[in-house]
Figure (cartoon, one colour):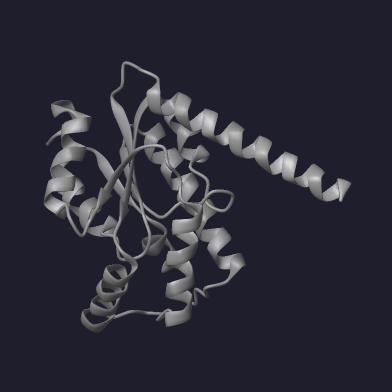
Length: 207
């Protein structure tokens, strides 16, 4: 009992620390010439669509997500090992882009304790980059329909089992972050969300 309580305290302490790091980077005002836009959300929420629209409008910006990076591995497997490799590569790519003066749009789902946002909060603080966090979501039935349509119209290298899709959506909804703005993509179009993000960024970053 005592050991279990100790581990709960450790997890709570780490969670509070990560939230403080995130909030500091989110609210702090720098003389910024770079930015990090986080497009968080479950599968089918429209992250990739909004990310692509932003990349067309913004100068010196890299559109990053794990889905692009994982196929650099010729025989990528949906395993903990390969997923960890992909995430590590993504973090290093983001650090190097910022170092070279390139801003980031990261279209990627994040989860408390599993895919923390704190790495990007630290990058933003170190590089004096503006950090903007957006959560895209929709009712589960709409997410599933979008994913089904995507599978029908797009060549998928490694199809995901339906049970895993359900699990991923439920896990995101149960472990999502709350810092940042939220958009329900069944009610707000990708174009309108893109416009809001561009407005938040300001004209200095436009092409």
